[in-house]
Image (cartoon, rainbow, N blue to C red):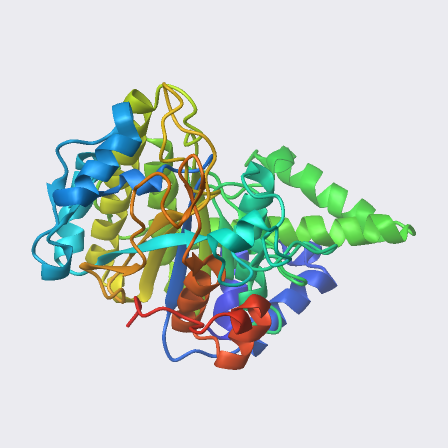
Length: 442
């Protein structure tokens, strides 16, 4: 996008030249100066809040593995999984029926599973855990701490930045606002040193709530506030005013880019479906925004299934699968399926053993990666045995991960365009593992 086109877009969105500040002009210049890409890529993080019982997504079909599974899962066991037999290595692995909308996507090669993933600082054995070796991650089984560990990409430090935001900054000196978009508010994953998430609503609107109106009176109030802040002698007021006016300009530019989009396939009315529909709309408008790289953050809650799991969990998985299937269909219709990769993260896995009505906080789990660039129709990492008392079980079916969150995330960062040295900078614990990345991306 050239300078004239970008300025025209801002003005089309209703930004008066009289209220453009030095911050806004600097932001516009940074768009022109940022790294130019020969391609477009987007990562969509789907965070499953609460700790998904993801071991119950992939199930043993027969033999001793199935007997062990039934004995450990008890009333939570899924007895009628869908076969994943088209791949010979998966002949004994089945899919939870609630994930049926993803079955065809898996079989066509656009979906992969990554097994045995969790927070690790180094390869860990049961003996390491029992003897409390120094490389055991802090605050295991804690929602907030484990969510943060997934998002930071390293042990939490005094300055809380996430690997998504830092990844953008390694690619661009000053990431454009539309490179970093959240449909679920502020989060550590998208927070960098110089970038933070641009928030949008599920409806796709990006507005400063104090200035919702479109009347002349609302515009007069807006311009008056901007003038007063710009004229203030207070340093705090000036900085606040520049930030506010930049936010308004960005919101109006985003809204203008979403006008007159090509029709998308239908999405459902669920919260996740609506978030992913807005992501699809922004991706459809990418050529107007001029961003070569984008990251998106969406969430789905309810996975802390301490009770009523037999009823709740299938419903959650069905909603997740339906929403992901809708999004995949939209990316195919836009012709960008090879350029957009969606992936799941969650606090942790859950216990294999039942507490009578549900499961408790665990450690390792399974994750999903979807898109045309994914080497699908396969399972990567380690599909851990669902057997109580195994060499991976620290207690009650809390399983030790065999793939670190950093290895999982680094594979996505490599596809996104980061160099090997940048990846090590982003994920400092990778040096403790024999393999820095996995092989699930083309």
